[in-house]
Length: 463
Ligand SMILES: [Zn+2]
View 1: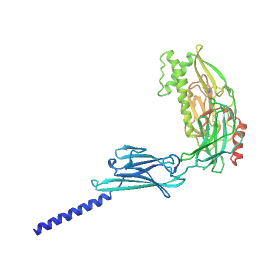
View 2: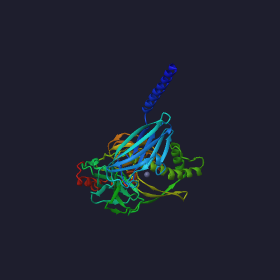
View 3: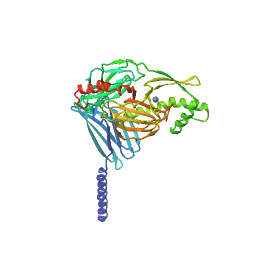
View 4: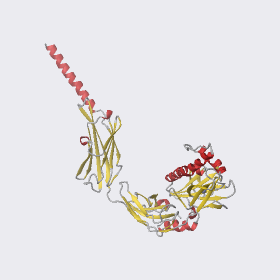
């Protein structure tokens, strides 16, 4: 009996010991991983608390998110009240995504100033007998007043289809800002890009596009990372500019040269070249749909524009060239005497001798050098501050993407690639992706009056 008693006691002690060790080890397992994806720092009227939680099998026993601020303690999220607002997504078997509104609108008690969000997640271990937890915190700043924006430069004169420059002040200086003309937004740049040392000063080019109303509102805007936005009108005068209308007659031999050449160089372009009717249909697709696609691709290059003003002085026009077509020429296309299409020509056509050298109009970086549909072999140079120049229909390309070029650097030779009737250079000047009249940029007086004077008056020394 005593031996049996001793044995039983041994079994009990052993079980307790094993159980104790298992319980202890279970508690040392890692808790769920928590990643607070948003907000990064600022919270405004609207903000979303985005949290990713990773735990084996997506199993959680509790999950809470709390915002604290002085005496305030608000629960933004708790697993117990799941489904109330916001959403939970299962991104993978082990990963849950939680999004909950946490701006002033969702939590009216929030006040401007520092705040902290704490996310706590627990998962069951040892058959649910224990929980292991993880805590993640992030320090935030609640900012409820929009940034302030004021115009610094004087005398803003905008030609229809042309560009203008503005110096403005944004406070706090780290807000995103720019100019809106009607629906079009133009990126602003820190004043340091043109030698202005005050961190609140900003500069930007904007344009009144050829197809916009003359009375389109022009406003400088600023938006902070908390989503608060303010804007103020830019006092300006608009000058109407009549745009030319022209007639383009195309014939069968033009279609035979142009359509197969563009089709064979353009992926995913559904045009047939089998019959004369196909060629005409192909031309209309190229002149319409492909033109729009190409212009979208050019517009997207604006994102690659550098913060620094890379150029000085006026842009150069192709030497000893004859102007064949001006900016914003409203063209009507005829085939066998019948109207077939209408498009607007967004550049200057400059003709010299065949295969004439094409030179960089100013200093910059090549952001595109390849075949581009209607533009044929095409080079785009970024000059910084959203300003870019485009050279089209080249027979040869002498530069590649990423090259730095000085004013006058040879980019290639003129040609007839793309939608070109004869050997010429098609030149376009772009402001944040919007084609503008290049005549202004070829004019040293315009640059002095519209741009450099404003930089000097604001205290800049660079120009
Ligand atoms: Zn052209």
